[in-house]
Image (cartoon, rainbow, N blue to C red):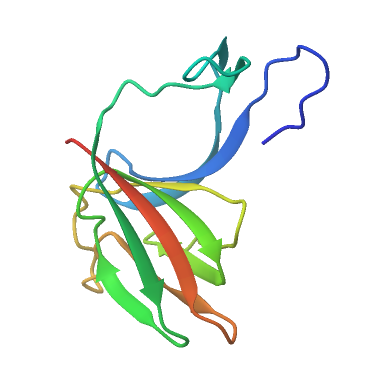
Length: 141
């Protein structure tokens, strides 16, 4: 999140896992913008970016030390927010991104085509000597 300085609209950078036109998963850095000043419940106004997609459910996950989730697609389009620990996401194009608290990812790799090695979607896992605690907000698809 960019720091608030005066009335400048903030933005939020995140990693997006997506499928290209060849069915290969990739990761790119994106910027969430379109923040508007709004009050929530009568409190002083704050910056909010309201997404057009509606959440279907929220999950909290604890990935143990050494956990690896072999190749798979995200079960639904979902925002992934690390709360503690570190984790990685590796996409079919070979990109590996490590993330920790304060970083955000969007998993949208549904519909990948398996490559010659049988990889489809992404693989992910913990990094370091502590579990990764994640909050997932799955969106209606």
